[in-house]
Image (tube, rainbow over all chains, first blue to last red; front, side):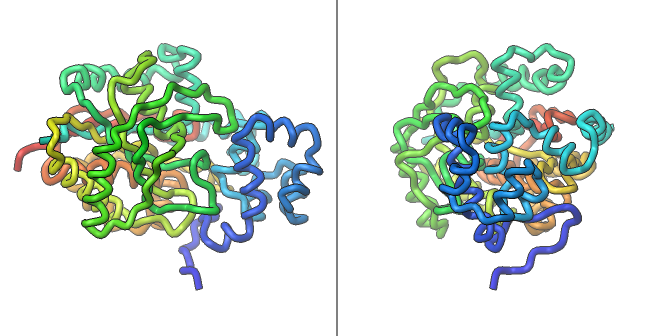
Length: 115
Length: 281
């Protein structure tokens, strides 16, 4: 059995269980290192997701551009960042979406952490 | 004999690559970060390292989950940067030093570090941004490099103590290399930040400050924490401080801070910079 990791609020550590669950989704995102593959995804998202065998939860999370759902479906942030890049989202956009804040409020929170 | 002239540790946030490409160094947002580097540039001009041994973590450019080495050492004649999917401009290839690589590999395996060796290895922003920060504007890099990649993608990650000891083993191997080389060790990543989850945006200035203060004289301080505890204290990507511990380990016994800088935020990250030199005990 994989070792149980301690609970951290609002955090999913990407362990073996997540790595198995998210393999197809992360493999698709890894493919986005290639510009040709990014174009193929944009041309026909359904076909591209089907080619990588995403399960329903993963396909739905991609469709909804929902980061927390993508993580729950086994997505790893390093690979998901490549999907976010296609969608024109940076890490402030991702942070705002996951925390339910506006982008400005999220950025203000970062600045406040430096005081 | 080869000699370690110093260790430099710095954050490697992708947005830095974009800021360099757009020449935003004097921009109000970026200036407090880039202003940390001129003292390091002056030091490098004096120290004139021939080789940089670079501890970094791959973010899904060279390694995928199909094969995920805990520690991987490059042994290639050159290291190419490539498209990571979200548009930072690539940099020219970095020359390697395969003979030194194999010497380090021999030393590591003899020292019970069962590493993965790579004769081909793409290097991502965690490797290239520090080079661009340390040697700005150089189309041709003035150093050869040996990449040492530490897994921070998939748990279990190696412990803080293990990374520190990896650095020590590399330090000993460098010091036993017969060629007269000047070597700088570089650790990239951190400091506290978290990109994923409801806790995204987490930063811990108090921890980072203590970590930077302790690193030269008391590097074992951080090894009291397990990696999940470090993730709790520094954020899920804050665990990249493992690269700083490895770089510090390579310096050996005594070390002193020559220069440091710390600024919040760069992108979602507390950006840190340290330059340390070995001190005779």
